[in-house]
Amino acid sequence: MSSLRNAVKRITHKERAQPQARQHLGILEKKKDYKERAKDFHRKEDRINNMRQLAANRNPDEFYFGMKNAQVQDGHHRKTREAQQKEFEEKVGMDTIRIMKDQDLNYVRMQKQRDVKKVERLRASLHDLDESPSKKRKHTIFVATKDDAEEFDVVEHFDTIPELAGRAFNRPRLETLQASALQASGYGQERGDAIEAYKPTEKELLKQARLAKKLARKVAKARISAYSEMEARKKRVEALSNAEAHLVTEKLVAGKGRKRKIKPAEDGKPAQYKWRRKRLG
Image: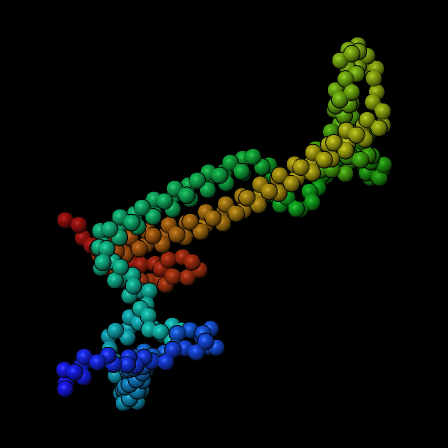
């Protein structure tokens, strides 16, 4: 009878599928999936309860040396920067670290030298360096008497036009303005003998004055830009000098010899050390 029962086809029982109205929710969870999820949930729950029990029974005076090399950041234990640096040095090796720092020192010195030379070139190209470009400059003229000072005519003294009399620089004389007007109009090329007799009109002089004023604005803008670049280069040189000092100090500290710190690091500058004197020979 048992062989006859096995020969008859049996009904295959299947788990219920996801109803069509709930197809958008994904595949229906089967029993084996639920068992795996339940085991994982209870495993995590037991671990959390165990950790709570250990925390409740912890001795507040308990100390491990690993606590000195770790700190809590955003609720997570992380190694301190000093511990990470020490681990990196042990992994890479002190010889490799020394070579890398020597390369960094050479690079910093090269960049510093480039900026120093750039500052020197900017200083050579700019005049009146001690005076700020935004500061209004003065032109003092000495006269013999008080009456001469009261009757002093700036236009006549500087031999220019009234529109340019208030300038402290780029103040061309009438002769220069006339020559520029002649060259612009081509009058002097056609009548070479009549240049001296030619007198430019007031309109031509004003035109040359406007051109000179436009050129003066460009020169002033270029001067301000050059001063700004020079100040930025100076700050960069100072920052590179601090970086160079830090690298040199690290190199000396890593060397041999007994030493002690006499001044901590402050204001971006490295700490100062004093080495013990050592007799030679």
